[in-house]
Structure formats: structure tokens, C-alpha cells
Amino acid sequence: AKSSSIVKSIASNYLHLTGTDHSSLPVIKPPENQNSNKERNPIKMIGFAAGMEMADMAWEVKCREEDMKQRALENERHAIDDARRSVDEKAQQLQVLANQSALIAGFSMVVLVESSIPEDIDGVILTLFGGFTACVIALMLVSTLNATYVLVAILRYDCVNREVPFDVFLEEEM
Image 1 (tube, rainbow, N blue to C red):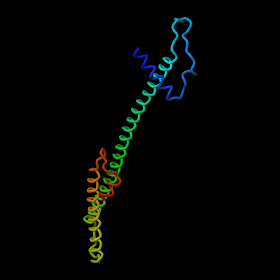
Image 2 (cartoon, helix red, strand yellow):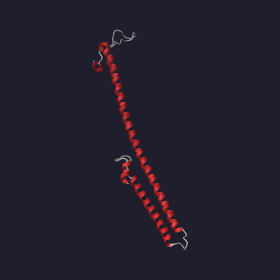
Image 3 (cartoon, helix red, strand yellow):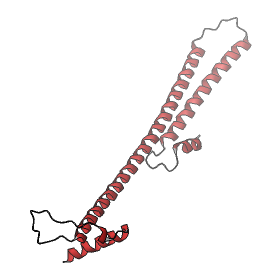
Image 4 (spheres, rainbow, N blue to C red):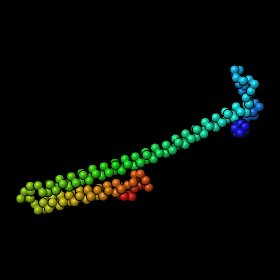
């Protein structure tokens, strides 16, 4: 009796929300092979259908919410991966720059030390050669140190929490 009143309540709410009059609905009769003494109440059948429809809607809503949560997690994972790729890319570029600067400085030092300078060379040219070679060595070492310091700053970036976007962080650090 209690379940039939719940079904009637659901059915009447469904009919009210859809604007349907239950007198216009067809009466569902049981098949011939069942007890024909008991007629099924159309309100009960509508209530059952409405309950099933409501259960289907609830299931769809639940699945949609789970899907949205999963997509949010995937978007967060992609954002973390993008940040890590950006940090790794900049770090690799700075390592290459530092290595090339150190290599050029090393070659300049070797040229300065190992070059055979003739005895009769003008002193001004010799001074210019020594000065420019020393400047190249100094500038390449400064470039190596700058690249190393920026590399350390970039590697401090937190890819997971990302308080600021990487591009903004990079501009602030440089």
C-alpha cells in the first residue's frame, strides 16, 4: 500500500510536469494468458514508467558528473605535462647555450696560448690580438654563468602547482 502511494505520487507529479491528462492515456491491459480478473491500473503503469525514466535520468546525471570530473583531471594532467615540457625545453636550450659558450671560451684560450706569434710583429697588433682574445674569453664565461643562473631559476619552477604561468615566470626571472 505504501509503495503504491509512492508510485501514484511519482506518476501524478510526472503527469503534472509534462502537462498530460491521465484520462487521455491508453489503458494497458494484461496479456490474455495472465489473470484477466485483475486489471492493471494505468496510474501504476505510468508511475512505473515515470520512475524508470527518473532512474535513467539520475543515472545519466551521475555518469555525466563522473565524466566531468575525469575530464577535469585529464585537463590538469595535460596542463602539468605542458608546463614540464616548457621547463624542460628552456632548460635544454640554456644548457646548450652554456656548453657552446664554454666551448668557444676554451678554444679562444687555446688560441691565445698556443698561437705562434712572429718576433717582428707590431706591438699594437699584438696588443689588439691579446685584448680581443681576452674579451672573447671573458664574454663567453659571462654568457656561461648567466645561462647557468637562469637555468637554476627555471628549474625552480613548480610544474604541479603553477602559481603563475611559465611564460610570466620566465619573464619575471629574466
